[in-house]
Length: 143
Image (cartoon, rainbow, N blue to C red; front, side, top):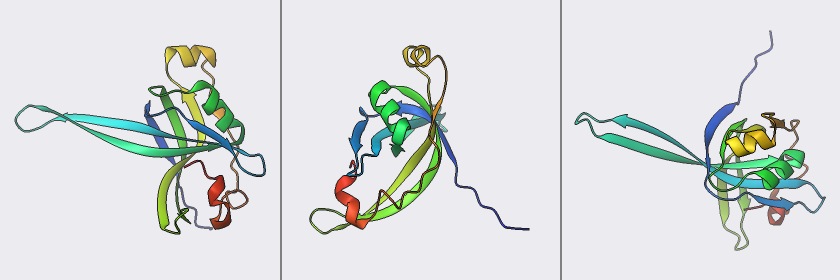
């Protein structure tokens, strides 16, 4: 029996900025944006504590265009995707490591966004990142 593995993440949160929609040199749409997820609890003294985590997200192709058109800072969304770790050299030759969520599916949860999309989710097929992202394509990256 072949061994399988899973790399899947589900997030519900709010965008921290308007998405940045760009196109690679080969014309592929890519949107990058950040999302905040928060949790709260009461400490031993009964005070409410809150912790916010920030996530970098990237969407490709048609889903990137949908994200760029309909999502704005503060939008509440449901995201399904996978965690990706990668490195690139910035313009000064400094190696940068990035952890990001590659978005496979997105559902707008705001009443305005949900009614605009008729409650439907947007999804994109899995795509190989090697054709669009690599050390020689760093200038095409949206961040």
